[in-house]
Length: 125
Image (cartoon, rainbow, N blue to C red; front, side, top):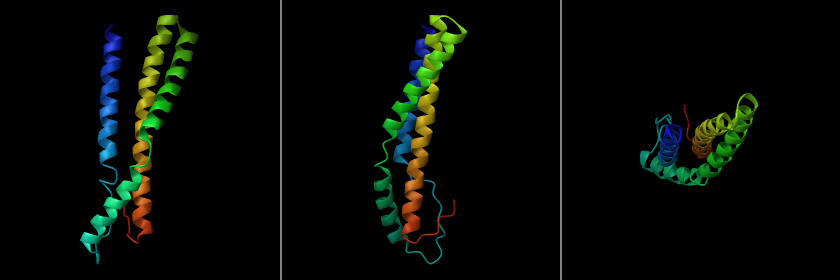
């Protein structure tokens, strides 16, 4: 019972982090502001973030969760009994969700960087 509660808590935390990161796409991008009209930059940043919002983070999380659960369950079945397989599947699923969240966030960042670079901004990070 404790394992299920722990997995549920971790899953909720992962999903909330995913939602939070999705809102911040492009939030920590640094550009060279020399000779830049900041009003135009903020408009461009807003438009680039809208492009990044098209990245389907939920699909990445779901795919990685399923893959992690399958791999974890298989490993658990090899090294233990059905209880071990179930626990390993749960852990694999959570780890997969974390990985999918990170990949989705990084892809959103890449979209915003590419968009700003394409509009002539010098992206520093």
